[in-house]
Image (tube, rainbow, N blue to C red; front, side):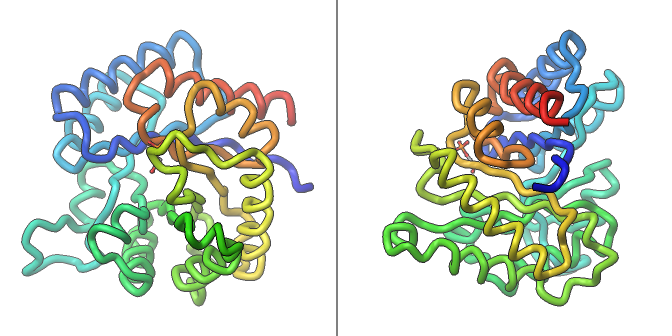
Amino acid sequence: MSAPKKPLVIGNWKMNLDFVEAVHLGQQIGVLLKNRPAEHTDVVVAPPFVDLRSVTSIVASERIAVTVAAQHVNPNENGAHTGEISVAMLQRLGVEWVLVGHSERRALYAMDDAIVAATLRAVVRSGLKVVLCVGEALDVREEGDQDEWVRRQLRAALEGLDERFGELVTVAYEPIWAIGTGLTATSAQVYEMMTHVRSVLAGLKLVDARVLYGGSVNAENAASLVAEGHVDGFLVGGASLKAESFLAIIGACDDCYALKR
Ligand code: 13P
């Protein structure tokens, strides 16, 4: 097994928290991180668009050890795209990461493989880091087709990507059946998929990409998932909305990395 990569924990706040609530949560995370710094773990939060300015400001002014992600972006540079946001706009706000192809965007907002690939390229060409989300629905898993499904999603998004952008890529495996359902994949299922994703990434010459797990990760299951699931970190939804549970997940990654090193 290769040397462990530095863990990464991302809180995806989804469509929760107005800017006042977002600042409050950011400050709480800052206080907890000062009490117990994440020595070995990169921490990222992904607030809604309208909170980004407030969160990047508070992170900078209070020197909170987190960086900020957007949950989505439009691949076009500018123009007649009512309601959309460009990569350059995010960059101006100090956003460093963008989630691309979250299953909720794919399922509810018609984000197909071609749009995912175009968006990913728009993000990395600007020098921002991308978190490519992949994962199968329950019927796909029940048919035993999850490996093929995830391979197809990875290739559709990443095939032909210029190698110099490789260091900007992170992959998050989020089985749709485990998102917001309280149904977590078992450590064995996660381990198997992590191995599979890494082998597909190796075929795409992306061996340095971190591979995260997401889907009902919480303070209780994070330690066993990180110890046994062979993950490089987590993409966390619900449990990232409370500073205590988010910090517990970060702590689990930090402890595990310190032990493995
Ligand atoms: P939950 O942690 O709420 O299941 O959400 C996972 C997710 O979709 C993160 O992007």
